[in-house]
Each structure stands twice: as C-alpha cells, then as structure tokens.
Length: 338
Image (cartoon, rainbow, N blue to C red):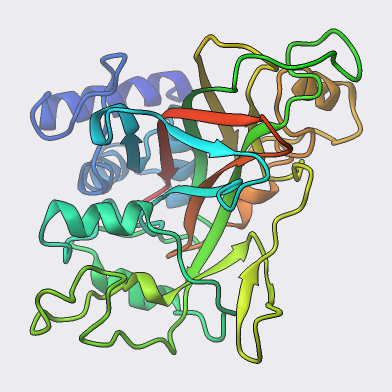
C-alpha cells in the first residue's frame, strides 16, 4: 500500500518529468506552477499508473495543492508613477481597484490588446441588479483547457497588497494595537455576469468605441453585476441604482487594514482557504482583528461558495477627513481544482 506522502511525491515527479520547467511558469519561491492542462494530464497519468478512484486522486491533489490558478494585479507606480490615493469623505472613498478573471479561466482570450485587458481588470462596473446568471456550461465553452468538474471548485484565494495610510493621526480611541482605530482598509467583492445583458457596438466600457466593427467580447464589462457590495435603488430616479457601502468595514469581506498613522509601506499577503473554519466569536477571530483582518473573514464560507464564472474583486476604503489610503500594488491569485 503506497503512502499519501509517496503519492504526492509521485505527482511532483511526474509533473517535472513530463513538463520540466518550460511548460508552466514557476512560482516566486521556485515551485511548480501548473496550467489547467498540466493538472489534467498528470491526473490521467496518476490514475492509470496507480489505479485509484477519482475521489482519492482529488484528495491527493488537494493535499499537494496541485491546482490551476489565475493572477490579476496592478502596480500603480509602473502604471501611473504615483500610488492610488483613496481619500476619506471624498467621492472616491470607496475605490474599485481590481477584479479577477472569471473562475475557471486563466485569461480572457478575446481581449486583443493590453488596453482591453486593463479595462476589464480595473474599471468599476455600473451598478445594476443581477437578473439571470449564466450556467457553468457557458463558461466551459470559453476555455481552451480542461475546466473544473466541481460546482464549487475554488481552493484558496491569495491577496497581496502593498499600502499605507496618511502617516499621521490623533490619539487612538482604544487599545495599543497597531491597527486600532484604523480607517483605511481593503475589502473583497463578488461579481457575476448577467446573461440578459447585450453589448452595444458603441459600448465604451470595453474600449470598443474606436472600433465599432469589432465583435463584442464574450464576457463584456457591461454585463458584470455586483453581489457584494450590494446594489440599492438610487435617489436619482426610477431605474437608477448605486452601490451600498457601509460606514464601517464588513468583517466578512475585510481583507486587511493599514496600520494606524504609519508612514511605512506595509506588504500584506492574506490567504483565504476553503478549509478555514474560524468562529467569528473565538479567540482566533480576536487574533485576526489584532492583525488588522476581519474577524469573520476566515470562516471559509466565501471561498466555498464561489462557483464557475464568479469574479472576485478588491475595493480600497477610507473614512473621515484626513484619512488617506495609499495603494502601490494589489494582486489576487485564485486557485481551483481541475
């Protein structure tokens, strides 16, 4: 009987033997970063070599974290030469920063140039209610690689953030912790595509207004609908909507606060996993708060609920006069089982 550890080693050996270092990009730490096709092929090789049931192979792959993944990021110093500033009490105190590609996809292949891709990544979607979602079959047809078999395939999300606040402030309201009374922070969001939305040839959201003969993208930006932050009716008139942003951070979606009144840039890497199970009222949750994170952010519920085609977004927040969220870099990595 071969041990689980030996099977994990065999997965990695098979991947190295078949693909070497050329077929997939390496991770930052030099590890193996498989593509969806890599995962699929190694799964087939392992199943045939060891003759294990598919469910057992799934367990082994989860144990080895042998998953496909997508990456979306923006470096404001590279793009703008200055950080993004999110200023409390201004119109931009709730700033959309970045979104992932739909879960199950690694890229949006019908974005033909950098500007189109950048528009998708960084443009805030117009607030509209979600009417009809696409089914998973639609997203499977868009991919040129094997897609997840599971209804909820996401295994973990990694947020990487480089930021700080304004660097000064008055006396703290409570406690000596470095994040106490911090009013600049980051929250995760969730978006889904509306099947009933059609993309007009003159649509500006996807940068097609200069080329009206261009075909509409399969997943137009104008079809995105926000699940969180929620959408509510606007006071501008019938049929108008707006995002609802609460005054305080939502502990379920709070990724990370900036240290209070600290001029030093902070590099934060926050991982949410489907296996997380932290009770929001536990001592572990209070430790999360002490680290500037949401006490209800590690229940695992957000990751476990994600399905094919879902889009994860990141929002930067600032509250009250003089509070400023300075953002230099932001990245989201989503890992899913193939």
